[in-house]
Image: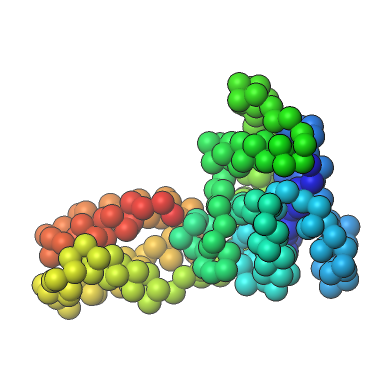
Length: 255
């Protein structure tokens, strides 16, 4: 079964190459395709379209550096037009909440063992569409567990090679608007009733702290969220009750 792996920029390319090397170790019937030896500017749209048409799985490797890249958007769009093709993303230093349309429509995979296994399971189940026999669940899990350490080590090295300054994925305004939307959803009648200037100032501080931890110190989004949550919980008495819970729910949601 053909698997199309999309990449753009150096770290995304490195991730794509690791995935391309690793997948056949799990499921031998897989034939990954990656344009690692073709310069981005020289890519042939005809060649890409041909490979996409043959593929039953598309994996888009996303990093903070390539979210708006035209090649990524082109390949993602082409993959999404294939009616019997499953399209997934692999997120490096990103969380599902960082991904905006049109890429947000796809099934996201974050770099954790269980989430990567879900991706492998999806690929395995797709084999039947290429007249291939999927691996038994128990066999798939055993093979995956044996090969995970190598994959984990290689991807971790790529994570550690992140640029010193990762561009800000979401603006403070985006985060504030999302939090306030959550507040309205939880309390549709009250809206901003009870919100004080102090509440808004605390929201701004929380958003800035969240971004500073990520962009300046390289903290992963989930860990940054926990740190901000701890700070907010120390200041609970400064928040109106419904806003306090909205912020806690927001920071505890998958990042």
